[in-house]
Length: 120
Image (cartoon, rainbow, N blue to C red; front, side):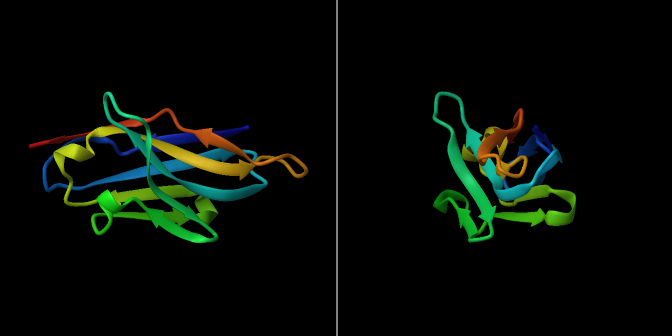
């Protein structure tokens, strides 16, 4: 089983910065992709940024402001968020697509979510 634990959310003023971290623990045979989604009140969960061996995908609304990175040795993915806007307010969920054990199929894993609130 793969467990994802997020940290780094909080309350910040518009224009401020936050750094989210997500550490993966448990049995991981192969980590295919990891990243962040977010869900604002009344809205669907949306992809924010994803990193894999194929590259990095970042949603247009955060390009130039958010940076995703991964420390493979620590199985940790980060989201550096700068120039935050009130519309970035949401619960941010860590996501991983991984093969837990050899000969098993890859599946998606989710963290519990961390609240990011940006005040105007």
